[in-house]
Image (tube, rainbow, N blue to C red):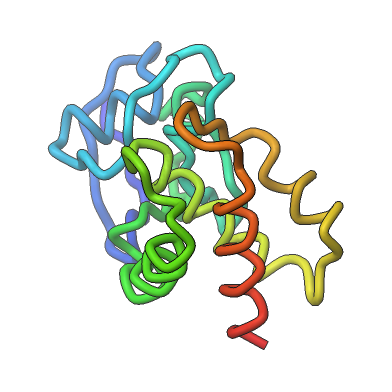
Length: 150
């Protein structure tokens, strides 16, 4: 069946099966910036934005998304570059596998919460796991990105 999505601000049509998850649809169509991690909705690596809100693409069927806006890091590249620079400055980009999902979550956080507290930041990103770090460098990078965006 065909499903029409607005992917990174462009109308796209995908051929999908009724039981196909968005993550698989994207990767099957060579959109590899969306990573496949746990495939169990627990790590956040596959995060994309659905109408501007972070979701786990391994947990939502593509057929349910007809006409919806999906954003990957490819659709917000200039913001991702800024986030990446802060991660590099703070030494928070060890293996980088979690970075794309985390970058999308941070971007959504910036859009949704104005002047978030430390606790609000931590709560917002709780679904994005990193197996390399202790999160302190990432947290500092996130704070600097949010402060710079004010």
